[in-house]
Amino acid sequence: MLNLRLAAVFQKQEDFAPRWVAAREWLRSGASPYSDSTYQATLDLLEESGNQPSSLNEGRFLDPAWYVLFYLPVSFVPYPIARAIWMTLVELCLVLSVHFSVRISGLKSSVPETLILSLLILIFYPLFKSVINVSVNAPYLFLTILAVYLASNQQGTMAGSLFALTLWMIPLSIFLVILFMIWLGSRRDHSLAKIYLSTIAFLVVISLILFPGWTTDWFASYLRMFPDFSWVNTPLMVFGKLFPGASAQVAVLLSLLTFVVMLVEWYGIGGREGRSFQWKLMLTLNLLYFFNLGSEGVYLLWLFAPLFNVYKYLTEKWRVSGRIISWISCLTLIFIHWRRFQITDNWLYEESSLVILLLPFITLLGLQWFRWWATVSPKAQIDSNKI
Image (cartoon, helix red, strand yellow):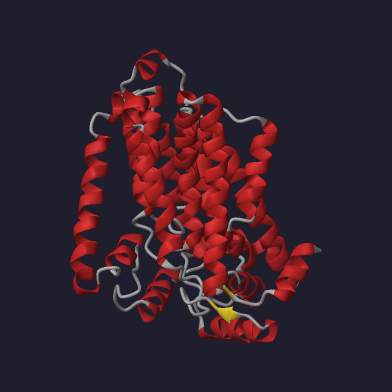
């Protein structure tokens, strides 16, 4: 009921409608998800509901055809109810993302503390906005976080299937797949690679059976929407715009530097265990965030595991004061982001530079600050606990 009221009160951009319409039209009349009739039906629905098409797709369905199948369950109910159901799913995924981020980070948190963190995340402005805007990416980001947790615990089969489901929606997940293929492969465990490729092949075959010729329609729709790469706007490009005279050069230089640093940190990753591998994994999540193609705020979900990892090292070094600092910093981050929203009143997908850049730079600095403590300190040497 609450989400139904929120859906009625907050009428903003959203990218759920094209998916719901694509599934419903295909189920009812067999219409192609990429057809002009489906596109027009989406625009009519958005106009009727008082919402706007997302600037990311302008109301078009641009995902590979197999993703239509994921929205079939909610296509049986009217759009307002389906929208409220998806909002509930987004909220659940945000809460579960916090839980598994805590587990991945190794932060020793009690059940009440984890619950409080989960509730705080729900009111964290960029993620609260993902609920209001009925984010499609939030559930897939949660699946990547769950897959990271499973893979780091050497459950490659389940992790591989989850990574495969997120390949298109969260393309950066391919780098996490490569990382875990190397790490698990060095332990003679190739289950993740096998199930990952098998699941993708299965999805492609099923989609070709159910949607004959969809690849041509999809490619044409995608090129019509994105004839070039002018839509790409990574956080590093946002940072580059702070230097108007050399924004492109700064963005390219930082992108190359960040990618090279990530590859260097991966060197010898197969032999890493426990805290050392955990720190490398946190750094990878942090660096990958900077390549978020659209600078979507919901990608901040990837940064909570690195943030909690920094909190872990704080509480290890200074038990009481470290815990106090952690909670104060968490509340301060929430306040700063809401304060920024009060100034900008921004309900669009494009976030301000502060929202996009503040948290990732804080976590990056925190991880570098505790690098020695995490990887080569006496504490790190004797701590043989796995993630």
